[in-house]
Structures are given as C-alpha cells and as structure tokens.
Length: 136
Image 1 (tube, rainbow, N blue to C red):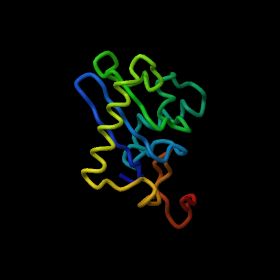
Image 2 (cartoon, rainbow, N blue to C red):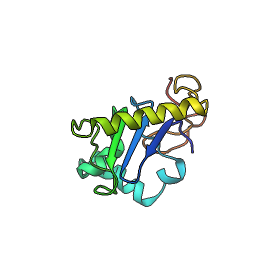
Image 3 (tube, rainbow, N blue to C red):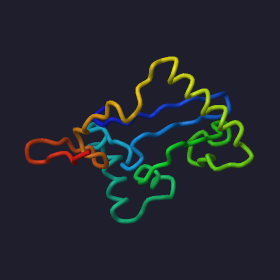
C-alpha cells in the first residue's frame, strides 16, 4: 500500500492486541480504496457529520497506541478494551509476547525507517508534482 503504518499485532483465540505507530495521523487509505464508491461515500458522510461512532474510528486522530479486543465477543473490533482493569494481566502478557517477537525477529523500531506517504492518508489521492506530500 501507499502509506507506512508500522502496525504490529499478537493474538490468542480470544484476544487481540494491536500496537500502532504514527498515532498522530489517521490510518492510511490506499489509492485503490480511496477511489472506491464505498470510501467516497464514507468520506462524504464524514464531511457532512453523518458517520456512526464505529465509522468515525476510521478517521480518529490521535489513534490509540495500543488496541485490545475480545475477538470472540467483538469480532468487528470496535470496543477497545485497552483500559480494562479486569484484563490488565492479559494485556501485559500480550505486550510482553509482542516485545519478545520484536526482539526475536529483529523488528525495526517505528522511528528508524519511516517512509513518506505517496497518497493523502485520508482520501487516498496520490501525490504528484502539483500535490506534494506533507513534511514528516
């Protein structure tokens, strides 16, 4: 795709932990999706203030550094449980497992190799000589 996300994830049969880098920008919209009728409708409804709370998550800024979902009870992953006191031990265990995976695979830090986007993150419109990407 056209945007650097640097998202990492670990899961069990019941839970999923997602680590997001670049939380100061919205999720990247690939150019092939940004020109689809579905995305154009979502973007229009966003600008008109007509999105549902779940749809608004696509455009949320800043994004959460971590997301944590019960994928059995919430398969659409809309109820982020990262602040749950009851699940704190599970969350911490999965964070440790993710960090161990990063070490074992020599995963690079998100600050080390960030690329410039070549599309507008929200619309998916490609940058060219007349439309330049924002500075990092």
